[in-house]
Structures are given as structure tokens and as C-alpha cells.
Length: 241
Image (cartoon, rainbow, N blue to C red; front, side, top):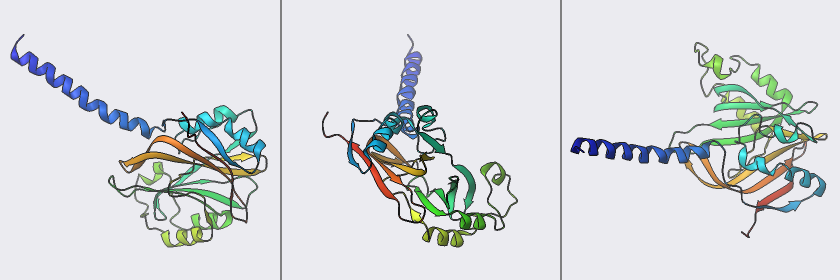
């Protein structure tokens, strides 16, 4: 075999080795971390927490922003889904703004995402705010646009448009997420109450996203209408094998 052929084979093998490494990293961006055995470490409502444990497989398989996250498990059971909708791009001080509007509740749940460059982590936050005040703010001109409309341009919207007013709205609400624990979209409705589920991971930051390698804790909060939300269930990684 000629020297040129050997060089070509070597280069093809090298390219295949290099290109396989990023694929492994991007698989974590799809929300497929490892799920070790989780045990119940806190429960203020044992029957409720036992029901939520039936969703355990979704804790691994659902991306944090997956709109159909828990539907296959709950469509005919005791849990319904309050979907989130994208309402703004590069406005109110954030890169993306999503909202859930639970029926019959005085609050809205806003999911916030602010990109800070590939070398810095995103801000990913979830807040409970007054629904009427939220609607009043989003009716101010220029009104927010979803991506399909925003990308066309000509609207004069910048990331800081109405950012100060939005910050004031958040200051009167309640932050549901913690810095180490982003909250899934959507919110879950169980009975007459709404619940947020957050996931804590062991992982690392890359491409401006937190790559979740192993789920180590899941926390369930009952969202209060006029009072602070309370933790009702916690599941954590077992110390055993």
C-alpha cells in the first residue's frame, strides 16, 4: 500500500476520534444525565410524595425546558401540566422569557434565561409574580415578541427594553429557583395546587449551559398564591450502590 494511502487512513481515523468527543458532551445538553437511586429524604405529605415518585424516570429523561416533559406518565393520572409559552426574546433584561399562567390563580410563573457568552454560565431563574401586573407590563409598547416575529427586525426592541420595570415586578414576587437548582418547565397541577420541580446536578458549565452528568437531588415546592412557597418533597441520591 502506498505511503499516501496510509496517510489518508490515518487522517480519517484521527478525524473520527476528534469528532466523537464533542458528541459525548452534547448528549448532556439533551437532558439525559445518569439517574442513580433516589431516596425520599423529606416529605410533608407522604401520599403526594409517593405519587410524584412515579415520575422518577422523567427526572433523568426530561430536558429542563421540554414542553412535553411529564405528559406520557401523567396524561390519564392525577397530575396535569401547566404549559409554558415563550413570550419575549432579548427584552426585559433577559435573552428569553417564558410564562405559565395557571388557571384560576392570581399569579404567573416566569422562566428566565440570560445568555452571558460561551465562557460564562447563563442566568436561569424561575419566579412567581402577580399575573395582573405581569399582563399590564407586557402590554406596554413595544410589546414582547416571540422569536419568529422578533428575528424579522424593525421593532426597536433591545434587551434592556422595560428591564427596569420588569426588575421591579420580580422584586415584588418570589424566586422559586435556586442557583444550583433550575426549575423544570412546565409547572405541575396536582388537585387544586401548583408545584414546581427543581433538579440539582453534579456536572459542569460548557457552551454557556450547565451540563448535568448525574442527578443528585430533586425538590418539589407547593406554590403559594400570597404566601411563600414551601418544600413538600425532597429526593436525593442514595449513599449506597
